[in-house]
Length: 267
Ligand code: PYL
Image (cartoon, rainbow, N blue to C red; front, top):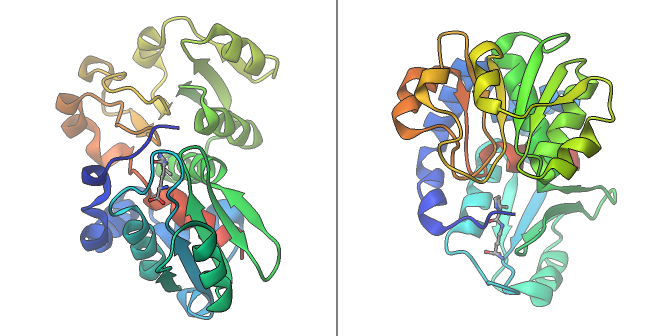
């Protein structure tokens, strides 16, 4: 999992309103609407307000990321949840969240980012939630994925889960990863084929799910008015000069979509 760093997320709390409006402009839905669409639910902010979420800093491994807990908390607060960041990290933090009667616990180490609902035993991890959010975001942008071809670049945990979500949508999927074994695994599915040269594919296939942890995987000369990109990968795989030519048809963020879907999926 690519480890975020502070200056990739420190802007999120004060820009979340603007982010949400841009997401609405692109997909017709904001964070809550997209999560409900992806999960087939109809929760409103009044329901979220009845739920207390605790974000627990975790110090193991490479330790706390300055601003991570605050950013996760700000996304949940924006959605309407009652939110606390525990004063203590780690096990003491879990104990504190329990003692403060939190319903939902969110915590992340270097490998996992999970949400647990103590009320109903539901659990979700960020990779699953992020993949579902970005596939459904792409679907909302283009009006439907059935029988459409989607190129998935990067078959890490999010890319792989995205392929599964796209199979459920009835899409035709072309996958690319530097690891040929990963491609071979996924092409066992009838609707999935491996591509050797993703750049060539982008000349004809215009729906892209970019889930690599690499910059500049999508160059400007492969982008036109038909191109739609859903990019859960951090850092953004679209070349900096290319972003301006596709920004109204590009979904990308370091945390917002994944966190919002995590919270709704454990209710
Ligand atoms: C969950 C993010 C999405 C992309 N990469 C993942 C990441 O950066 N994981 C590490 C998160 C560490 C959090 C740290 C803290 O502040 O509690 N343990």
